[in-house]
Each structure stands twice: as structure tokens, then as C-alpha cells.
Amino acid sequence: MSSRDAQLLARDAGVDLVEISAGANPPVVKVIDWGKFQYQKMKELSKAKKKSKPSELKQMRLGLKIGENDLNIKIRKIKEFLDEGHRVKIMIVFRGREMAHKELGNELAERIIELLGTETLVDGKLQMSGRNLSFSVRHK
Image (cartoon, rainbow, N blue to C red; front, side, top):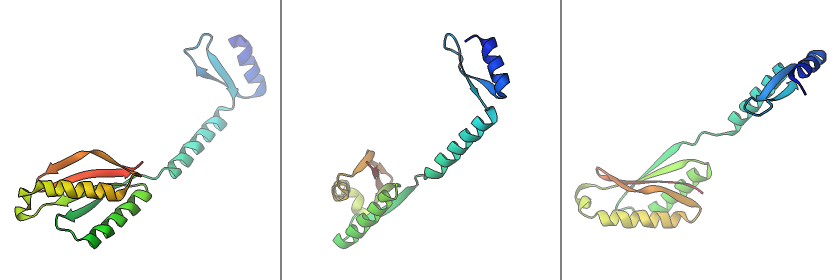
């Protein structure tokens, strides 16, 4: 349809002629009510914004000499955070002379990852920063 005919059709219907794709040959246009179109688009955006929950970064600190039951409690809490959709940064804190045994921290980190199960992903690799060994986990 020619652009003149499309403009006449839109004017007769009392609506607007909106260009959808300018790069196409010939250009693609739609005959719609512009105000209603904008209102619907705004409603869709606000609905999508309400549905999306911002993911927080939760943090869990553990000592190198943590007991078995304490570790299980921390693991359970980490799983709760993950189920809520949050990412969790796990920090293993070295105190005093524990810095000489960084391999124990790596073993504890591997054990934590194993206890969290297969439904979690480790983001990046283990990072040593100061006296802390840290890594992040998130839900698959």
C-alpha cells in the first residue's frame, strides 16, 4: 500500500500511523492508537519489573576449624539463600598461624561445594584475599 493511502486509512479510522521498521524496503508501518500502545507498553514494563526480584549477594563466613554440626547449619542456611534466588559469597577466614595451612582451606572449600550438591554453580575460582579464601555460588 502506498504511504498516502495508509495515511488516509489511519486518518479515517481516527488512529495513528506508526513506523515499525524503517530499515525494511518498503518501510513497515502499523495503524494503531499511539496513546493506547504506549499505555500497554508501560503496563508490560511495570509488570515485568514487579516480577523480577533483585538478586542480592549474601555472605557466609566460616572458620577453618569449624565443627561438623556447625558446618551443616551453615550449609543449610546457604541452601535457603540459594532457594530464594540469591548469590552467596562464602569466605573461609584464616586466623593466626592457620595461614601456613592454606591447603586445609582449599579442602574445606571443596567439601562445602560437595555438600551443596549438584544444583549449585561455583562462580569463578577460589580467591585468596588477605586472610580470607572466598568464592561465590549460585543456583543453576
